[in-house]
Amino acid sequence: MAREIGDVILKMEGISLSFGGVKALTNISFDVREHEIRSIIGPNGAGKSSMLNVINGVYHPQEGQVTFRGEVRRDMEPHKAAKQGIARTFQNIALFKGMSVIDNIMTGRNLKMKCNVFHHALHWGKARAEEIEHRKKVEEVIDFLEIQNIRKTPVGRLPYGLQKRVELGRALAAEPSMMLLDEPMAGMNVEEKQDMCRFILDVNDQFGTTIVLIEHDMGVVMDISDRVVVLDYGKKIGDGEPDEVKNNPDVIAAYLGTSH
Image 1 (cartoon, one colour):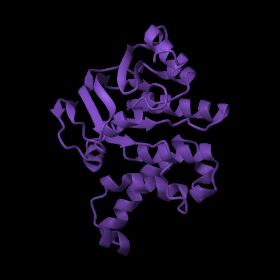
Image 2 (cartoon, helix red, strand yellow):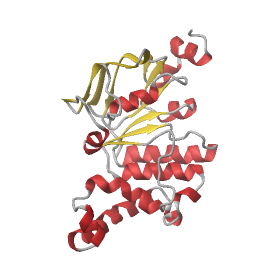
Image 3 (tube, one colour):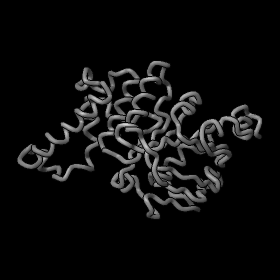
Image 4 (cartoon, one colour):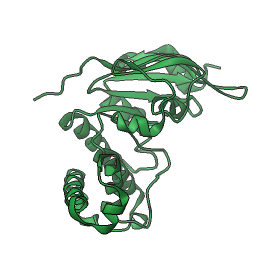
């Protein structure tokens, strides 16, 4: 059954964010629809990561309003965003390098666990049953990402591309309704990018997960995105479907370095 893009589930309205006298974001508005792949692009320093940090509560904007599933979110914190179904990956890999692949992905299940740390330490009763259930979910993620042969390998021993796949797996293990992916293909070779594109499309298609994506590879963005918003120096200069954005004179100027 084909994926159907639904109604707006995230609205960013008039978002402005400053650090001291430096304006990271200025009066930016856009929305995200359920089940779509929504890309945020722009030159270095455009404010893309700052925008993701506003969405999941790392930063609180001085002006503007964030609405998620009809609820205005004030003073959102990352753990609250996670509980609401928003998962996140980062530009710089944030994995536990000494832990195995399966244990890293297992950390993505923390919010789903009901038993306390003491019971899990004893590995007894309900805690044991709960861990078995969570490990079953993690094994499903491992099968989905085709990393069965490295499931017990310490993450620090893996090549960069596989580490990025494990990080995607940890986010996916939380069973989010929305995933924020901050440059998931940065530093990858062509084959690794192709694999990551396939997995992102499959997550979106098979699980119905809404994807908000930052990516520098314009070919990737234009191939997999439903809609694209373009930032430059903290301001929005374009917003629409890939072909519309690709032919926007302001976007072309920004990428050619002639807008300022």
